[in-house]
Image (tube, rainbow, N blue to C red):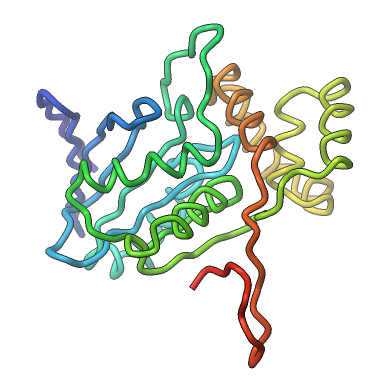
Length: 247
């Protein structure tokens, strides 16, 4: 496989090619009301067709969260028809600079409000959202506030509720006794997988420790743990819907 790197004034353009396909992607630092957000656009948006927009979980970035999925052979047909916009939470992308002491990290609500600026930057009318954990919360909030911009959502491991007192106490106690990587691993994986799949857990622990900016990651984790309740409920089939739902 060969890679060509082209620099422009506003972004970096990478071209990956092999015997079967050629894929171009651009990296952008998009200005939003809550600071710059690193985005990676793979492919070229096609007319009014929505773009797939992804948002990762805490302890991850768009590469560690989604590369395995989008590089799978079964996804290649989808990639031929849709461009993909990967969004990295502030300071979570590869090689991110450390935020200065006293930097006020955006809230989860504010992170969702960066997305309209991102769509405007790329000239997008709507997206199909795909997200995990903290990213799923952010995209759900975005869909609730801007339904016309969202064609559909694929949300994995979303917790739409605010952190409860028991959760708060547990995080405080674990913060005294465990390092950040342990907290992230317990968030990303279940107890059984942690105990049995040592190779996988070791790989993710290495990523959290060596690839993620620890100071920036701590700010994102604190942001997620301070989330508000989305106040949505799953409607009962055949029942009267008088609560906030995702349609």
